[in-house]
Figure 1 (spheres, rainbow, N blue to C red):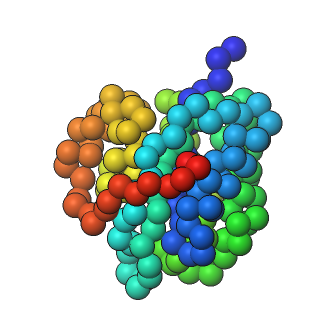
Figure 2: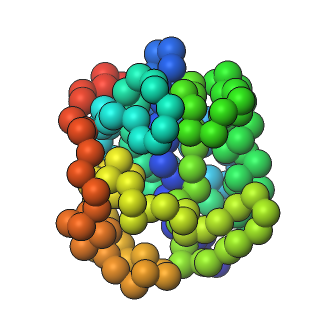
Length: 166
């Protein structure tokens, strides 16, 4: 049986941002029956939201896994915690953010998990890295490609950055 293709967004704006993205990618790749199959470029982006904070490094991973969505979410939260993530303030600064964007073509909604991620179409810092991996990937609810969503996404100050070891 084929494993579903999953997309995970990574972000960091506290501490050694690049090292945290690299460590997160390695930790995700080391999960049981899970493999990172593609990585986007890394982008430095202005923060989005009402809280004053430093710039983020953002990237997206394409992953294949036999974990179910809830089990993967718990693993991602454990990786965030291991990186020192504090959930004191919504949209606040963070050492590491791991967002489950897509889980194959599944549409899921529970108290702690929505897939596809509900704000993908608003987030250029997610859409650009998704387009690096697969611009033709079609959103299972919006029925639009990542490229078409990026073309109309709100503008955002972002720049490509070189991360050694990424």
